[in-house]
Image 1 (cartoon, rainbow, N blue to C red):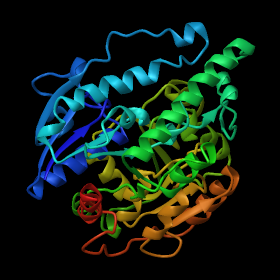
Image 2: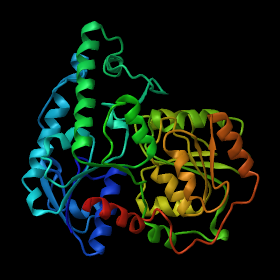
Image 3: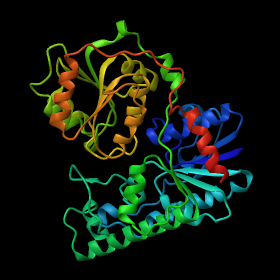
Length: 403
């Protein structure tokens, strides 16, 4: 097949989970003999962009997001026109190329983009986060999961004390956002990376038509991980690894506060990643048993994961489908996480009972972590395949392309 991937997260010098998902899928499809190009932002494009993100195919400059300024923060409102404008920009760019491909597959943060793509185009989008109904994509504010459904209440995410006018305008923006997204879902095919995301959208838009939607969990490149698995003698007892962007939703601060006085003498917490809270948390918690390592290349992250006693994913927001958890499971590692979002669905991919341990609260998560640190690290022979290897996911995706 001839496939055009589209994402505003690409290219870039450092790409996040969504961008890695696109590159992993695209490279795997190329290996299977399909023709795959990626369209991304022209304002980030340069001759070495494909190599920079690890893509083995052709990268196309599609749309420029560098100039428009909407001053939402200054005005304290969500602008009803802003996101549809960006969605139309992406739709116009992909439509210039769509006739050359069998399918256009969009991975991004503007779910209404499909509304501006004609129904006769074989257009698929993957929803990676709660941006289907939440304009900030997180459903997380003031350090807590957001459960409000009234669109006017979303105004507090752009202004600390919105007045009636700001509530009205922001409410109009969110209602339009959700309505246009529902139109896109009814017109074109949609993949949700967890059933949690599908249900979350229906909670906000109960009458949405999701008959053309499918749930296909995230995937990893299993052979790459299997080659880097550690033997029992290479695993460091007491080594706890956390990986991710150091921001409020990832729960690093709550976790580090909770472990005070709980860590056994032989334990050490290593944190890979960067983000807005790193400096504060490092100043407060770094010491002999807690170290901040900053950003690391993916290969090194996987090697350190394989050699750790435990992996902890302390996210306090609702992770849609944590790739870090899938990587830990594929490596045979024990991992601990809060039972939120799409995380409980990933227990289906355990090699053994108790590999993924879910806790309702942070104190209980830390208690379970300490219990596991009192035991020898678990190492198991890795099988030849893993259900959520990208090559196992591809047949389901290709079938969906052809529907």
